[in-house]
Structure formats: structure tokens, C-alpha cells
Amino acid sequence: MQPEQQQQFIEDFGERAKYHLCTIEQGLLNLQKAEDIELLYQILRAVHSINEGAGMVGLSSINQTAYSVS
Image (cartoon, rainbow, N blue to C red; front, top):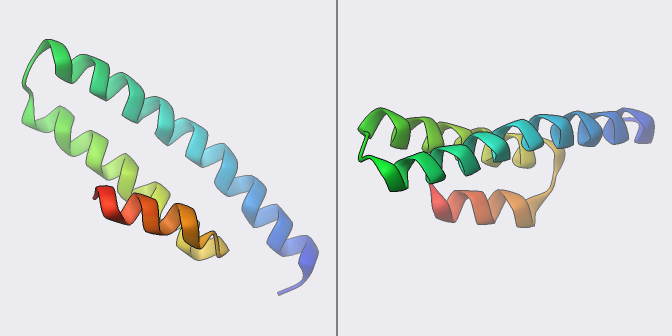
């Protein structure tokens, strides 16, 4: 893979990760108010997406951290 492609993949991952982190944050805040299994699944899906994305672009520390959560 070319360095330019790798950099673009990392940037794309960063944008997607921001979205997933917002989902996780809002989900955790809402989970404090009400126990909702579907909300918990939504949070875990967002964590899993970050895990997979980090693995695909070679960000092993993020990948390992997200894996330990999920």
C-alpha cells in the first residue's frame, strides 16, 4: 500500500471514529437514565466498529483497547 493511501485510510478512520465515539458517549449518558438492552447493543456495535477500523489501518493500540472493551 502506498503511504498516501495509508494516510487517507487513517484519516477516514478518524472521521468514522469520531462518529462512533459520539454514539458511545450519548449511549452511555442515556444508559444512566434507563436500562435499555438495545442501547447497550448500540454502544457495543460502535466499540466494535472502532476496533475493526483500527485493526484495518494498523492502529494496534486503539484496536487492542477497543477489543478489551468489547
